[in-house]
Length: 447
Image (cartoon, rainbow, N blue to C red):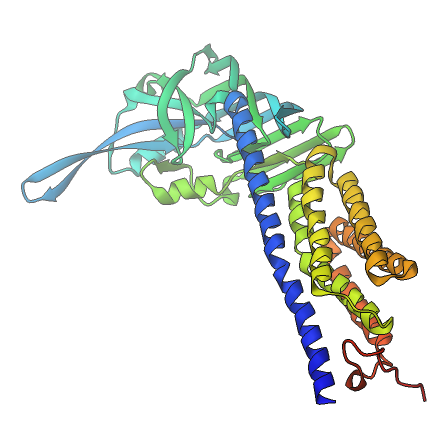
């Protein structure tokens, strides 16, 4: 009896080892998914280079160069240059977006063009307070109003720029805001403006890829946005106060105060804390694509080992219950067919979408494994049962993938039911009296 137990133990361990060996092709499939994701990202980058990337729109800030004498040694005095920023008091922005999909090879991504109107003002008391609280000297005659846009390639047109009611024109600039945001600028002499507020009004056309976000630079920031895109994803540090989404598109409105952000009405370019706080305050909308085939392929691959193990267990049960013998090579061939499902799923989903690709790939593998089981087991009924069980498993996987929020719950229920079913099917097997190659398993009599 000890030899019999050793025989069954070796058989079970061998099947388990073969299942673990199949982790190698599954790992390679996951690497292939990551490779295709990188290729898709490269295609999106290529599109963005000619159209404009993900946009962060900051509106206008007042930038004033500063100089400060600093003693670094007993007889050594150095001059430190910096830029002081003053934020506007109010800004109201209205963005009307048009959206479409652009393709590069087999990959596509949403792009937009937005007609943006904004108006606002700078208060003289904010400028005076920032200047008074600064230990450096301000060069008022060299001040600039800088328009902050993350990717200037998307700035297609500036149809209006009014400063205190007078037409002005932006100049190109090498200066950045908050470390990495590009700007264009219009020079302004603070001494010649008098004591009144600085009013501004701008109309422009801004293009970009995938997302449009804003910075809440003003003491009171109002943003309205609309686009004919039925699947918006509102992202960033603030969600819209009002929004409506339907099949024709979305409308959204944000309203933020200076109390909602982690920086004040003034700052310095050399202050890294100020720059980080500004970058962390972005909010806006992303043109979400609800079917991400790569994300679903990754999630499907996480269940690969479980599927292979369950299929191997099914073969093993037929081997025990039907008094059959399955060679390890045959287990490997079945495992190869199961791993080919993920390669076929990835290749087809890039062309026809995830749902259709899943149906074709699953049907192909079910037919292959079911037909092979008929030949290996020498019984059509056994092969049909195995194929049907495999089809049920793939059906359950699709339900898990579709119900993302309940994936863990559904997966746990399926696992418990599977274990209970295995225990039920093997409840009458006398493992002490069974061994591979024997005339058949010993089945205990019911009491």
